[in-house]
Amino acid sequence: MPRLIEFNAKVTKIHQDDSGVTVDYVDSNSPDGATKTIRADWCVCNIPLTILTQMDINVSKPMKQAMAAVPYETSYKVGLEFNRRFWEEDEWIFGGLTYTDMPIAQIAYPSQNMFKDGTGVLLGAYGYGPTSYKFNSLTPQERINVALAYGKYIHPQYPKEFRAGTSVVWHRIPWTLGCYGIWNESTRRQHYDTLCSIDNRIVLAGEHCSHIPAWQEGAILSGMDAAKRLHKKAKMLV
Ligand SMILES: Cc1cc2nc3c(=O)[nH]c(=O)nc-3n(C[C@H](O)[C@H](O)[C@H](O)COP(=O)(O)OP(=O)(O)OC[C@H]3O[C@@H](n4cnc5c(N)ncnc54)[C@H](O)[C@@H]3O)c2cc1C
Image 1 (tube, helix red, strand yellow):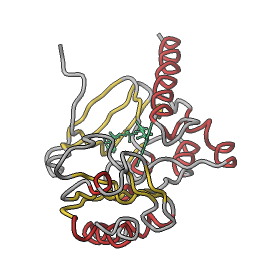
Image 2 (cartoon, helix red, strand yellow):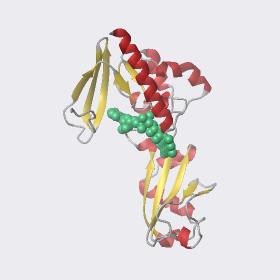
Image 3 (spheres, rainbow, N blue to C red):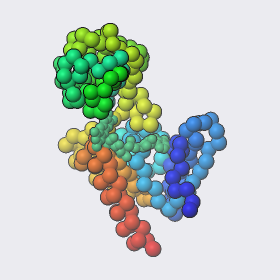
């Protein structure tokens, strides 16, 4: 059976004409390597709009306007590893969340390995919105420092027990450049139907083409809907 999925294929250009779609891509592990090309009758594209709007793609002007009309929410997370599970041993906290009014927003406690000795990892910061832009502008080490500095007001054990940390800020992830598409009533009215329409031989799918953005459910429903509509259109052309 031929390989159906080609991994590490970073699309650089999508060009359609009346008989099909040509997609250029490079190996994302060696982006300076040769550009490869693949041709198909149709293209279902779920590349996030943050990236698609920067790509060479020949869709209609209304589609381009719709693609550019959806900004993306931003988010940050910091993971902190500690020498021992002090939240369980000292404070009897087993799973769950602490919501704070500090820039770390919340602390989440692990639901696995409860009652075990040894190290444990907390989600030491997880938030959205304006605070996220501040986290985006920090280095990875600075983000950890902020999470430790605020978290110790909740758990004074932080400085003594800290082992290691890591962080993700979604606006700096090259293959998403943000979290999810943000819609309002006005952009829905003006652009949603266009964004979901079949633009000659290209149809978009993903959470950004759904009424449930930011959820896997929206992405899956959008993919199923796009495939159904495309199938119907393709059958009509046979
Ligand atoms: C912090 C955070 C927490 C979340 N929590 C939840 C949750 O608890 N429950 C839930 O249901 N959903 C959650 N979501 C949302 C969920 O992850 C998304 O809605 C879903 O993954 C969107 O699916 P998608 O197919 O639209 O996009 P994606 O899953 O982002 O897929 C897009 C794909 O395009 C690829 N791509 C990008 N650029 C290129 C390129 N140039 N060439 C080729 N490929 C490219 C990417 O690598 C990626 O694989 C969360 C999202 C975030 C950011």
